[in-house]
Image (cartoon, rainbow, N blue to C red; front, side):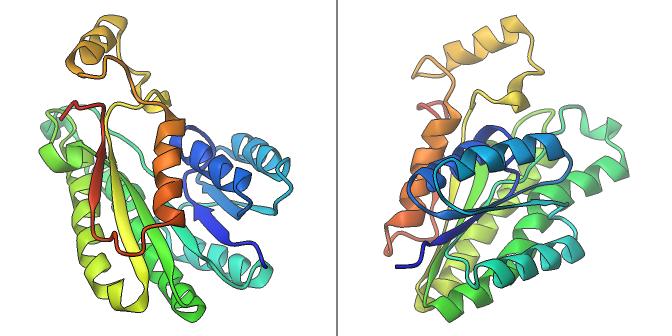
Length: 243
């Protein structure tokens, strides 16, 4: 049997890298992407290939329609199909809304939300041709509850959640399931801006008593990508009981 193919955006580090490696360990051919960190992306590619699977690495901004079209052309040429899409590319912005520039707003919307549209739009025809597929969007608890000083981030993740629910209804008759994972506080570089006392307070507020691990997100994403043909349109919280 031909190996299945997964695309993970924002895969040079953190959650995206953990997800890509998880699928590689399970025998999937893997396509990885990031916008800027070429050296880290190539290192991730090398690690994935150590599991005896093929790996394509593409440096480009998934908020750009042109970059996405080029990436998907690569996928069609090398693999001919796509079974699982993991929309993970994302950035944060911490600060007062009144201090946020138009450029910063447009950048976070493009990276966190437009990228999900761009990749999903191109993945769907490939999945239709293959008889089904999975789209998994990496979201955040802030997309459900909102966070002070993270208004733009919260808005984009709320958009991802609504996108997930709507697209799931649209694609369910075609055997394509669409779900999202609303992550809580995960121990990645995205949270390293916090001071030590802030981090201690955060952990105290989480009933599980710790930050989540990127590998725990990867385990859930793999399960959603591998099984569960009746589970669709869900925003699944992974937050240690925090929210």
